[in-house]
Image (tube, rainbow over all chains, first blue to last red; front, side):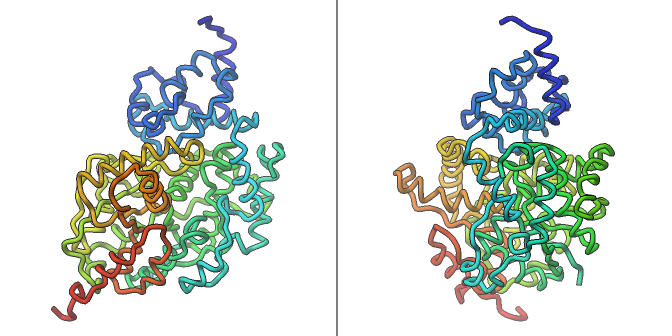
Length: 167
Length: 305
């Protein structure tokens, strides 16, 4: 493999800008991968393996790899990392890089639209189920509160997410 | 009576309102009054804003937190993901630059994050604030002889440095175990106790990988405990156990009947004598036989004995 220092510098800059501040502390010990449910389930590019690629400047090369979306954000890795890398934050920084390049599954768009429209990422009409258990049909949440929905829309419209044309 | 902000999230009020009803029934009896956080929305879920932009995540989370701040109450979540997302946002908001940027966004909706409300999980309020003794005093049925396997779920355990309440050892959690044992039931250890159930982003990204992880955990429970029921304090884990056991059974991947699964406060509400039709009536797996067993006359605790 040819190591290109410019690519490494650029990759580290992007990962840090997206919240993966600890990436350069990694010594590739693999403690994170040993406890990662995603690695255990068979996702090939998480924790140690992902950080290795990123530290070698391989960013665009992995943009279509869906492993990062299998991360449960469980933070077992953060708990055991002896270097304070906080590997989950690096995985999510890479995921944010992918997301802002629109490299993610189309099924994920529904959640963004739901959040924008109802304030809930998961939305199903709850009225019948709520009546059945003896609760008011409408939740006290944003789902039935237009002012609350408008606040959430304002926050999303004025964020980098608002520029992606998802909602 | 002490008040606490009841942060509902998405799945509990919209898909499992029987879990919400169980909160509303048990907490006042135990001396804590849940207060609605009107207009609170999604935490936001890991697959939404946290996957796009850190400050947008913190802005949406802190909007929810400011609703509790205005009422001068702490927050109690029933969903582990909400607990994790809100707790981590609060941790990021300790960084002055992040807080300033987020408050800049919140100013557009006339809100300001102050950091005065803490984030707790339902299990923390029950275990640490109300306490096991008070729970025991309010039981109407004793669950002696029933075998429970517990599933704490990931997002109350790690990363422990951002959580207000920590387990002594997050790889060997005991809060839910003790909450179950107070009912008289036996909580059996199994080797995959801290294992992930496979719900969440993994399930929507690759359902087969998720089911593989889930099956390994389920077999560990079945073979090592032969539990009568599974009890969890995570609404996502609840959905995975309730939805995916029948799938594995249908496929012939398991040769035993799905094990009935409850969110902890459903079990407690049943043991406190509340109506199953209100607190434990929405599930894929038939829970009626075990509910009838829990609320059987033989288990009723005699007054004054």
